[in-house]
Length: 314
Image (tube, rainbow, N blue to C red):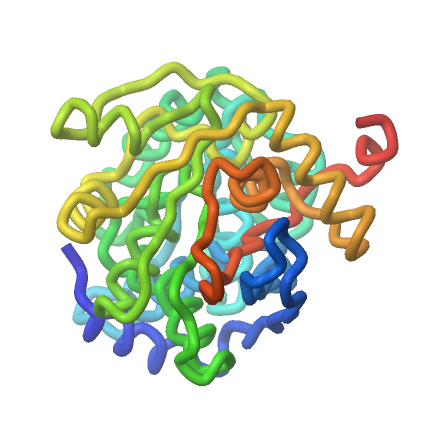
């Protein structure tokens, strides 16, 4: 597992390399009218998602080590690859990214714009992952996991330290979408018990809920509108250990609820986010997670690498 100290070290390492993303205090907009709600607008991060934090921490830590890499390899549904390609380019390193054939064209095009060599392999993340592992089997190559490496998770957790500072520590609950769980893991580690974490998953990809039921990470089927960003076949070991130790609650939402929540974010606040990102908001708009009166809730809006043209048709 990782600790708050790991996240603090990551925050020091990535300072000046990642954006301090804004928060939007929207007040009491839920039924009942007493919840203090804040959006953490992490979709404004470099490359359009929180993934830049973990990738930056992973690459900078390796470059500062005794055997700095000459090349970086990643497997990704899109966002992690974008982050790795961005960080590698900033550090003068070649990057190779393996993505499934189902990766959105907007993400694949951006990867190439960032200078990465892109290979599309298989219909799911798991196939791209195996191909990337084979490519990274060399001493001078750094493999960046999309969600299950200590440096990756600690880097993602810097978002939570930043959020606590922005809210002057006045925070009870963080609601976050979960796929492989790297962001959730980092947030739990950063919390140090100062707030609870609610993990939101599509019903079609319940990686955490299934692992909690089975007592260990297990493979699940992958499908649905959020598969491009939350399409990991199983929860990461780091994320599962932290979730179980911290009693993280898993909330499941339907695809139609995710679509409606994404549209609501556009209609009310003109925020264009991915379906995976909108899952976190769907837990609140549907009432699947009901805050207590006066509860101070932050929703992590974690990514926006999406085609906005489909918003009007949903």
